[in-house]
Image: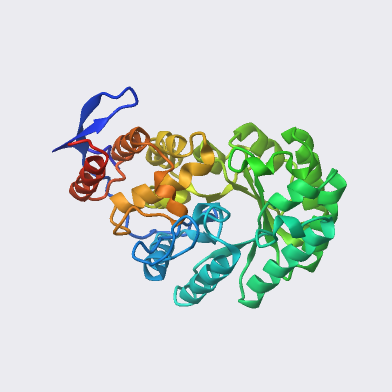
Amino acid sequence: MNAPEQLALKIALPRADGRIETLALSAPRAFPARPARAFTRIAYSAAHVVADPLATTDPWLDTAIDWDATIAYRRYLWSLGLGVAEAMDTAQRGMGLDWPTSLELIRHTLDAARDVPGALVASGAGTDHLAPEDARTIDDVIRAYEEQIGAIEALGGRIILMASRTLARVARSPTDYERVYDRVLTQAKAPVIIHWLGEMFDPALEGYWGDRDHLRAMDTAVGVINAHAAKVDGVKISLLDASKEIAMRRRLVPGVRMYTGDDFNYAELIAGDSQGYSDALLGIFDAIAPAASAALGQLAAGDVAGFHEILAPTVPLSRHIFCAPTRFYKTGVVFLAWLNGHQDHFTMVGGQQSARSMAHLAELFRLADAAGLLRDPELACRRMRALLALHGIES
């Protein structure tokens, strides 16, 4: 696959310093519509939800989902050979998406997956329905996890065990984490994926596993995971630090996968080294799905150079989308889905479309163009110009 060629199409975009600069767009890259072969890595995309912009609700207070568009996007991900990690942070879990709506989302996705041979789905179970005033003890946390896990398992779903803000708040030592995970994992019907989400994604999770030092916290996490290896499919680590992920990966017992959640360094971590590699469970795979699928296809064919050639221009895009405050990355994911015609509007649950500046979105547009990811440049320009005009910038 060659780098995108330049088109005659141009658009004027703001820069961070307030200047307006003209971008000459590139032609989109020609990514395969479907994988030619089975991947050699398991790859989940944490998928976003599409809000219903016409619902009669208070957007900051209520959740309104366009179910047809939301499920259509999951079918698109499956068509590219990617699994769907459902009701996770990318779906605005804890930032607009509450537990009842999350369970409804999981049900819709599992129903749709039954019509797609080989479709992978794993769903987030947490404690976010537990009101702060009702969360006083470790037993309260355990019961909350059990409730969500039971509800997902009753639908036939696989579990991603999400990090718990409540556990981070009430735990007093690593022993409390060991107690919670021991109880929950012992009861799980099938092996789960454990998610260690860092404080850069959610400040309320600082000190998870009982220590603010990630390496000391890792001791506790690895001990829990290896002690329950029969009930752990893998661990997704989201610390945006490749060295920490590799260190943890090498400490896991055989049979327990490492799923990279590093949206800064995913290419090198998936490619791996002489001592192993990471599978993937990534929010950025929602935004770069066709490139991710094509790259994984090259890797499956033994073309490591081709894998890196495809993903290299997506890394600056991902680092921009996930820049601090990292928790607002969902805005960039949905923005790119809108530019590419996967939804008809740039409206998000909780009004989160306002979480990033126009300068940020303009730079995202430039980087998506450089990666060949604007699949219809004319549509992308038309929508970008409309957004710029709304913000007083005539392009």
